[in-house]
Image: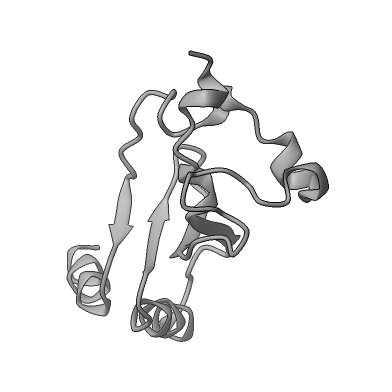
Amino acid sequence: MSLCEQCKAECCRYITTIVDTPEDEEDWDEIKWMLMHEGVTIYVDEDDDWNVEVMTKCKHLGDDHKCMIYDKRPKVCRDHGTHECEENEDSFEPTIHFEKPEDVDEYLKKI
């Protein structure tokens, strides 16, 4: 079975975007505000980029883990290869990871 046939479409279950590194009280307040929303986490990746991750399934993902618009999918989807799949990569442990606003408060107490 090929990697493509084994795909569980993990990358189709969230979106992630890079945000500016928080520098002041207003930035930290915005981080906490984001974390007040369901399905949102914030982490620092191996490149020291701050990422906001929103757990939300693509509306074109079928129950069989297949893309229902595969032939018309966006370029970002076409460019994402199975070699980049979370299932095929070494596990990544973020250096900083927040799941709720209180995590930010604890972090700020430490630094």
